[in-house]
Picture: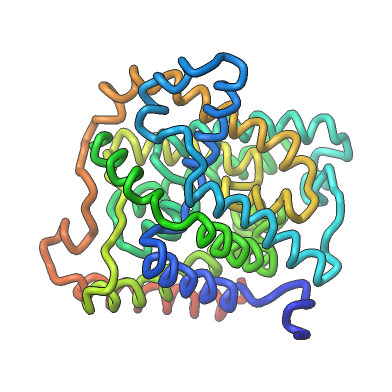
Length: 172
Length: 189
């Protein structure tokens, strides 16, 4: 039980755990662990609330279907699982500005939220453009040796490393 | 390519939703225990000062790959691949990377960050992602017939691409990942 209340596990224990989880999600649900489609469905679903059923006719939503699927439940589960882990170890706390950010860019929560919003736009847009994210391509796709996923995952890190250097070494 | 994907999707989503929730809870629990729900850890990886994220991903890929390919060889599971193209994966991947560094979370870890109590993730990041995917849906008809088709290679695996037995790729990739991780430990990263 002490294991469950520890704040951090070694990255290898976590990685091996995620790998084993992927075996069972293929075996039981025939699904790879992936997240970003659910955000696109949520986005479409919210637009539907305001603009009505015609939103469903957009070609992209015709393809991904505006439904609550297995993957949507997975994303909801991630929130719950992380909350449980954080509460068990006493690592849960409300926080607006992460410390590494504050160290370089200051304590303004408004600035942090605006930048996070801009980052989110690119992240969401890029995830749909590439057809997946760090879990769908980066873990589930690469472990199946999918060509699309290896290319995407490498580009995620090239773009991410370059932009992080620019943000923290040039601007910061 | 896209129609095939949507057919796959509609079949896929028939699997019991409760399992999605169960796998999600376990995945979120592991991400939080690994520190991957934290901005500082993710940015540390992109600044190449903290290799936690890469260690988690590579050990997940190593474990997952061996298990999935063993079960595939036994005929227990079928692969579930995303088709792709140069225009989609390279350009989309780079745009994603920019967002990854600016936000400091990705779609999976942001869900974990929200569970961890991080409000920049909930108020800023989540709203941004929903906006970004909405913009993509709006532009999709235009992108689909142009840049997303450039250099289309379909849903192939590396062994299929090289026309070799699966294990001819699985074994070297496993060895490579193992030594990469060993190297990271040896250099103290």
